[in-house]
Length: 260
Image (cartoon, rainbow, N blue to C red):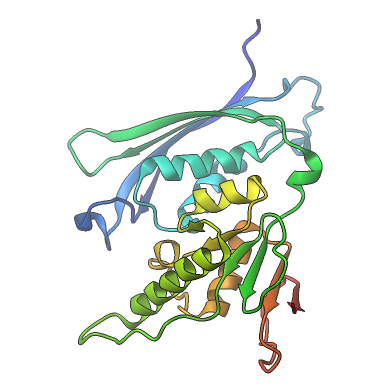
């Protein structure tokens, strides 16, 4: 069997805030990325046309998007995200992702993942998930990601971080809502992607993903818009009480009001 044609990105170094230890938070460390992609078809006969190949930019962009998505504790999670970004391209059949930390020891600590693109239902893949405020009892669409607009009013401790307290309050509300609706609660991108893929409604607890995103407000509307953009939501549905006015909605994601 002939070996597949490949493209690669080697020894690509970037600084990132990553790591599970408290000593790694709030400061960057050097990461080295190596990606090798098996192509779904050989490159012969492409007539020197850049639009008919898998561009190298796909690899560097996958790294950039992975780092921009959220702050990760684990290299493994970041590598999974990068692999998924690359395999979303139809000309990529298999990807090998290696990420190494260069500042922890005199050598390098890292992980290598191999991922292969499975058969994807084209119609299902085209359907992006919904993000909802859940302020009313409504039928839940398959694959809906739900964020509650109501959170308990937690007291701010002396010297406390008001934004983090607000995020934790929304997490509390998410778990309460999940229990009331009989739904799982997700606090990571991996869990959200799995639920959407399985067409299962899920409640989002935002604190883990949003805590380290600079400039992101801890109010439900800002969080919903941010998440909708991150996961490629096709629409943002607002389930609001009748006496609550529709808010101003910046950005390009379509919105609609839904009622019971």
